[in-house]
Length: 130
Image (cartoon, rainbow, N blue to C red; front, top):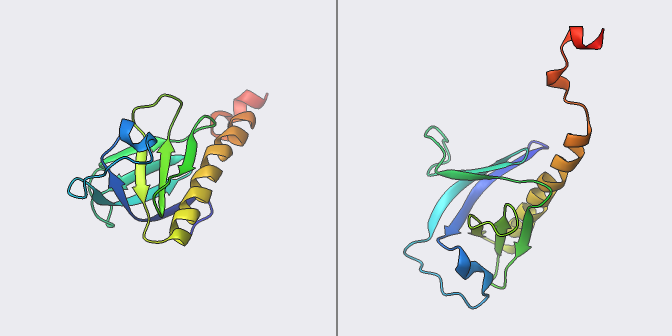
């Protein structure tokens, strides 16, 4: 893995409100296997691991994002901000993979906080320092 990111296959369940109820019934038919790529604080997903096509979707993570393990095995919920209707309900192949993703996503959320307090290096041109 590169330090700031992670990638791999996860199953994305088609749910928004339902995910919050632990008894939610998920339609296996609508669940889609997607190749997820976490880069810094951007989580995007693709139909294939080649990532040649446009991402099917994505979320930006920040200090207000919540990553929560769900009642179902190897499942977790990614909520980009409070009251968001765009949360992702994801299922990993096994519990270790699920934990790895939860840790990586949580790190991505908190990394943003530290980044914002540091001066933006890319914005500072040479003449800005005079």
